[in-house]
Image (cartoon, rainbow over all chains, first blue to last red; front, side, top):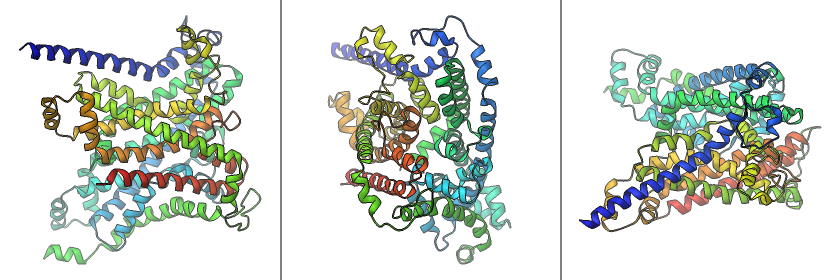
Length: 284
Length: 295
């Protein structure tokens, strides 16, 4: 009896120790972002003082300058446009393709699936320069539409991998019933398969959207025109510029805007991302 | 009857329309560049032209290039430390969050995952300021706890620049692998843990004797992902945070490839570095796979 009670106290103690550890760790993890947030209200003189100190007043002016003196707004619009177009292309490419690859045993289907699995192992950085040379030869540098197409075309492997899991789990009965009702393969795909695979499709789209939104190196290499830059490129560029212009307030405010816009997309898609990682990531 | 018929008659037009565009785009934008990387690595292609065939010269030259050797050493250091620390940390965190039954576990999970969704360029800029000598919080923190003598220009010091990048990599990736490990641990039957508790096994013992062996395969896969993830992040972070500096002290293979190819136009040499990096990362992946899939 005594042992049991001691065990209970010990458990409570352990769980509080763990709680304190987790709170401290979470604080350390999130602190750079919080610091970024409150520092964005500092004056440029305050930046030279103690870094951890809170600002004396809220300098909303930093935000006004971040919006009016940089191309941040344009960059955000560029990013949104590229994300929407590339995600739409990716969905149009990968849903029908993966469906055919897992449903119809045509010659080569297995091979194509295997090639896509292998392509998962080829990192983007290894084709970066070749893609630059290719796009230069095709006269497609500095085009936002071309970058969106490029994101979709180079991002096919992971969606095929994830969707093939989702699609092969759909029972064939639904499709066969639709076929008996006289539906052609196109109608079956659009009216039967797509609604059934919706969670998988949304997951793939969220991954793709966040990936394109955050992508930095390819966008930096492909887009040089100031007015065409994506948010990720614009932020790195702004850092280069403001570091020497010593207008840190503007830079920090811009960083916060970039952070919040990303977190907003993340919050919208959080449910699907976690779900998708469980299904397609490493399980099974 | 209907089934047999379906197997015989494939809707060829439908399959063609569905599959061909994707495959063609993959051929143009993924396979062609990859194959071309290999071909060009045997040439001295540069800004002036596509160059001539030079055999293995690029590959032998790189081992006489002290900046390549430095970048290789740095990459190996990062891979060895960052991948291992990230996976170990994320595993421990996943274990704590799944086994402790803290009510607010979801909050920690979200907080730890947030760094993973931020663009690497934004991450790099924020951390460049965190480590900044004059305005950074690292030095400010050291001052406030009376360790002012440890203050330094973290990114400008050749002893610390590389490890600053390593810290950012761990910060960025730990939540991602934690969520994967949580999913894996959730798949383990709770009864096994209960049996272990009856046998008097402590938490550390449970982690090492139950969790790790049971999800060994998954740890292997997350480790492979961590290796390629570390390589993938290294380019953007080195580019924005340090530019490979000071004097190559934080240069990594991906960044050196970028420097040789995009900045100096030595495409042939850059391609050889790329092929080398790719083979290295594939080799490590297969090795990991072989070790964890054994038995």
